[in-house]
Image 1 (cartoon, rainbow, N blue to C red):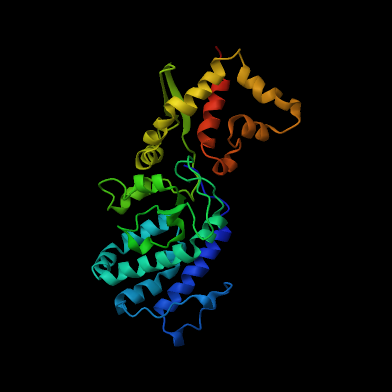
Image 2 (cartoon, rainbow, N blue to C red):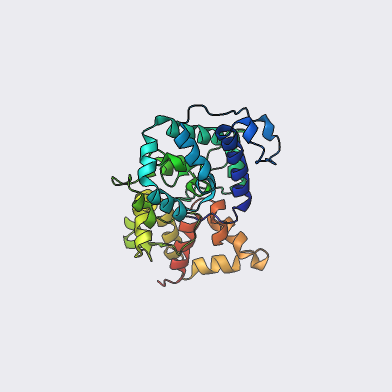
Length: 312
């Protein structure tokens, strides 16, 4: 998993768009003067008062709007635990789920592409294997995964820290979490991409060129084990055993001793940076902060670094 940093511009944009929509839905026109939206072309939104919400639901969302839009993942979990009985009662009133679903569909359809551009992540946050670039104007290949599933917890459908740029594969593999995914406690132990922690490192197990497999180092922490299981990282990366992993291993051992080191060190005689060499030779980004720019950058970098310390 990669992490999302420098997200303030995207967070501000998300807040303004969703709050504008929510205010127009939750408050009658005569009561909206307290909120002045400064988004360009804000008045082009064709939204109006949402009549289907019961007074109890409307009051609850109004009161907790800031948390529901901008609370971090731990705040959202704590909020749900503090209000679980009341929220479950509101969920029985089908209109509240429809309300948040409508908010998400509105945001995704009209503003999702620009939101993703502001986050500026070229590859899937979960797997770093697939590009999530927009290929056609008005459409984005990235999907917005809900870190806490919106089907089980609709109140968090448009919470900023619950929206994760992902590829189609990861979004559907992750699904609604494990069988106990209906319990909010499950997400206390799952790393959130907006909250950077020390991560596992890719490694490998070698028996022969026909038996080489992906492994993980520094994966003893409970949160990391939870992440690997939840996002099925082992299963996803096992598909690379006989391709990228074997090729990197052969590159290190099929050629003369220290070939890989010399290839990196001496290529172009210092005329280009080491970062550029990694892009040319391996097709990946060398620096961690740039991993999101090219698929498999984390995986290949960590395997390469381990191979560099191995002697024939």
